[in-house]
Length: 110
Image (tube, rainbow, N blue to C red; front, side, top):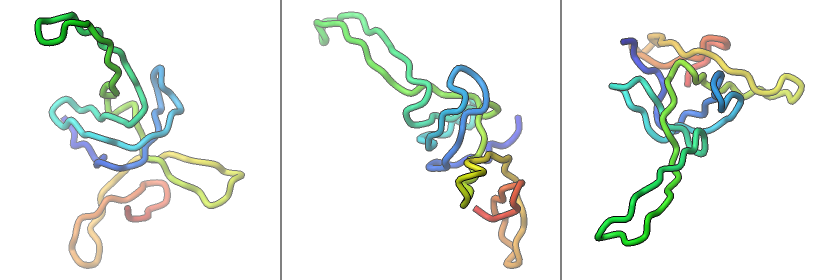
C-alpha cells in the first residue's frame, strides 16, 4: 500500500465516482483502509432499528469514506478564467533538510 499524502483540512476535489466534481475539506484520514472522509460529500443514510433504549427507529445521515484514488488536491488559481485545477502531491527536501509536501503542477510548498 502506498502512503496517503492528504492531511486533515486539505481542500480536495472528487475526480471520479458519483460525487465527481464536488469540492470539500478532509475531515478524517483512514490510513489502514486508504480512504478519506470529506465534509458534505458522499452523504449516506443509515436506518437504525428500534431498540429498548431507542423506542423509535431513526434515519441518520453521515459522510461515508471515499478511496484516495478518487480524490485530488485542489489548486486555487488567481485568475477566474482558468478556474480551479487539481494536482497530485509529492514530497521535496527543502534547504533546511525538512521534508515538505509539494503540489506537482506548480512545485509550490503546501
